[in-house]
Image (cartoon, rainbow, N blue to C red; front, top):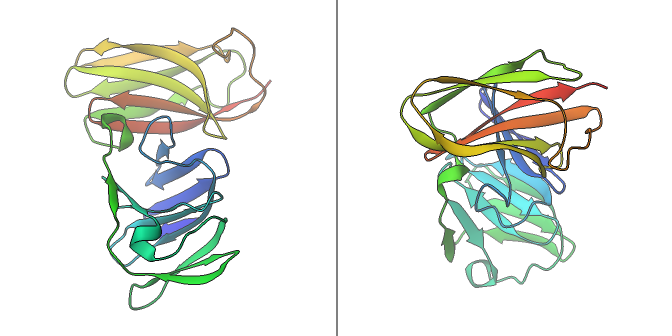
Length: 216
């Protein structure tokens, strides 16, 4: 976990990417819906500019400024990182220290690669996503979201590991309030087990997610 002030909390998922909770609004970032190159997140830290630093199990060091992903590779850091990044610390001078199986390293340079963020990678105010009802639910639940303008929309269900388990819809939606139902089945029509899932609404300007609890 990593805290960004009093309003934002980040959670790293081993195999699922990262989750952001900002004043009750949940957003999921993984290799399926963003430019995050590795879903196996092992360490997190927030620097003085409110940028999120991410260390992965496969030795990826990344920075996310809320809009773009920056990759710190051997050319940028001077180190070939080929082991898990166990921990990240930002000191009072805003220097980023990270611990690996190869030792303690310091990263100050500019990144060599800025990975462009696709349209479905950040949360924007063009869509308001409301909590599903009922929640928790057993057999059926209903979602609601409101668009401020017409947009292509992708509506997905993700499990806690960040894997998409159900595609509810992919189509053009008009600027209005819309409702959809989900019966707790995956894309193969099989009942999913009890657990925490995420309902994700991706528009042409960003992605917003909310958690939902399925109880069998």
